[in-house]
Image 1 (tube, helix red, strand yellow):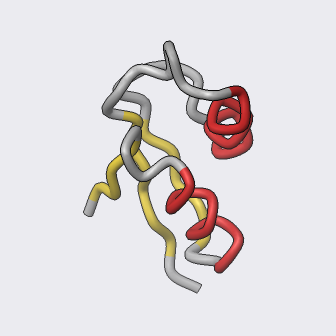
Image 2: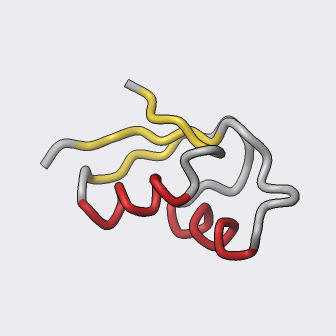
Length: 58
């Protein structure tokens, strides 16, 4: 499978607890951090849940 790089571009301050847990599950704990994950439906669903806080890096 292909991999995708996910970068947190907005702060988690003020976000609901569910979105903070989703960021933790993705491995994003600080701003401007980049993590690499498999391009799986579960990961894409998590990214969709917090799409206003993250971006996909090519």
